[in-house]
Structure formats: C-alpha cells, structure tokens
Length: 141
Ligand code: TYD
Image 1: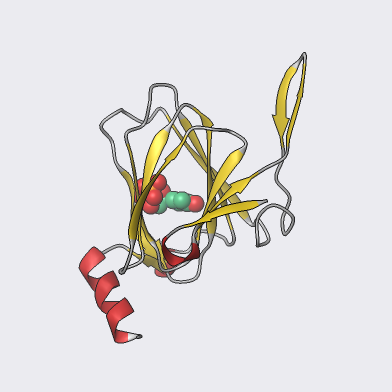
Image 2 (image 1 turned 135 degrees about the vertical axis):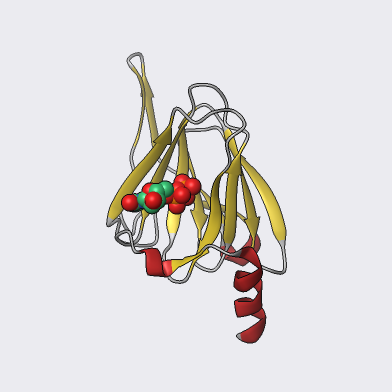
C-alpha cells in the first residue's frame, strides 16, 4: 500500500502488520512491498543522538529505510524539492529512489535503522559531494 508523494518519487510504504497477544509481526517481500529485488540488507544501531548519517545520493540504487526501533528524521532533496520525514513505525518504510540526496539525523536512544537495498554495495554508485550532485542533475535536464 503506497501513500504520499515526496521528492524524486520517494514514498512512504506501509507493510503488513500482524498483531496478536504475543506482539506484532511485519514482513517485507520483494516486488510485493518494495519495488525491487532486495539484494542487500544493512542496519544502523548505537547511533549517537547528535550523529548524522547518509549525506549522499545514489546513481542507480534504490532503498527502503525502516525504523525498527525508536525514531529518526530523513531529509530528502531531489534538487527541486526538499522534505523531512520522521520514521518511527516498524510497519512503515520510506522508499528512496535513485538520485535523491538523503541525510539521517535526530536518532532517538536505542533506535535502529534497517535498510533494504536493490543492489550490492558499490562505492562507484554514490554521489558523496552535494554540489557535484546538484550539478549532475542540472546537466542532465
Ligand atoms: P556510509 O556510507 O558512511 O554510511 P551511512 O550512509 O549510513 O552514513 O558507510 C560507512 C562505511 O561502511 C563506508 O566505509 C562504506 C561501508 N559500507 C559497506 O562496506 N557496505 C555497505 O553496505 C554500506 C552501506 C557501507
């Protein structure tokens, strides 16, 4: 199920949530709940409250970010539009499309960020310089 539109076609996605007296269970399946094959999973944890993660965009990679514990903010920027999304629900994911700059901040104590990625780690797929990223967007219009 897909909800509001964000920069670059990023989207909030709601995953299934199965609740009973034993607690909650959510699950994510490739192409059913995220629009790609999940080739890699990584996660951030023990993040200090003042730390900032991300600070990059990708040429091709698509990701879905989930707060599986606690909360944090994701700043999105596609060169035209900016938005800040607070993630704090384990049954909710943020799809970040390629060519969208993202910065993660304001991590709560005990928070954990799960990332589902469409491809293996490849440093060549990163834009790590914001000004160069914006220039690339402008050049390709
Ligand atoms: P970095 O891109 O700074 O993390 P974040 O986007 O969360 O701020 O990555 C930190 C280091 O980890 C960097 O040396 C690259 C390495 N890394 C991998 O080896 N594999 C991975 O899947 C990821 C995401 C990072």
